[in-house]
Amino acid sequence: MPLEAMTGFGSARSVSSKGEISVDIKSLNNKYLDVLIKSQTQLSEIDILVKNLIKQEFIRGSFEVRIEINHESAIDFMINHIQLKKLLKTLHGSGFNFQQPTLQDITRIPGILVTKPNKDKLIRKLQPVLKKALIDLSRSRKSEGQKIQKIFDLKLTKIFSIMRKFTVFQKQASAYRKKILKSKHALLGLELSSDQFNQELDMLNIKHDFAEEVERISFHLDSIGKALKTNASEGKKIDFLLQELFREANTLMVKVDNPLLKNEAIDLKLIIEGLREQSQNLQ
Image (cartoon, rainbow, N blue to C red):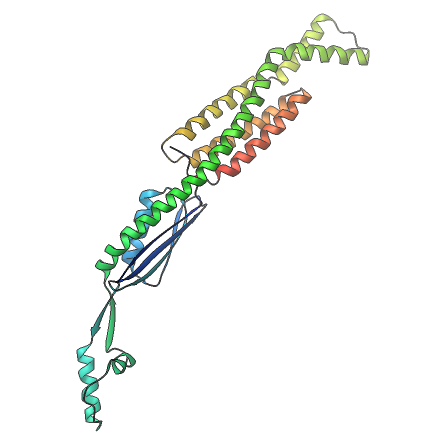
């Protein structure tokens, strides 16, 4: 399953002779799942519907849902006959020659014409539009995820290339340090016994041994590769693994005593930092 980003946009419209319903959804990065609903129709049933459908589809992200409803099923109109009778009685009692109220009369006086949301019809009309918008949003987030996947593939390839250099050097490390140590002693004019020289060389090999870091980095890279291929949402796990990878790369840079490899370790850290930035956008 391809990676899915937390950033995306989805929309859907339903237009008919009876009116229009539109839904626009924008999602951004968030460690948790947060939903903000903006609609002129303030119904708790709509809020519940939206949040439930989002929770079914997504793990985390900040969602802004805009709903516009201009549909005949949204509102029922009713005449408050009790209030209308009171009005007519008051007018007649006041001496007005008032026969039949017009629509303009009714709409001008509060409480006569009552509007009431038709919850059941509204939900039935809104639900398919909302689902289409969520499908569109999911498609958008997966498209962004594909871009992130390409970046991961490219940068992980570079990391593997760097780590091969460290693996090769491990086999030559003792001979390299032995040569450096001899050059240092010659420069300082020091003459050490074979035992003293070997003891100093052993200390250098222990101090600069990075075999454990290479092994851990390999383990973390393997775990990241598996997380990238899983069907579940692994954004948080990938971010955690990259944190651990960065720690090992930092230790590797401190331990390595070859100047060329130290530069490679710096590049390794920069690549991992770049991957961490990308992982912040993964669901």
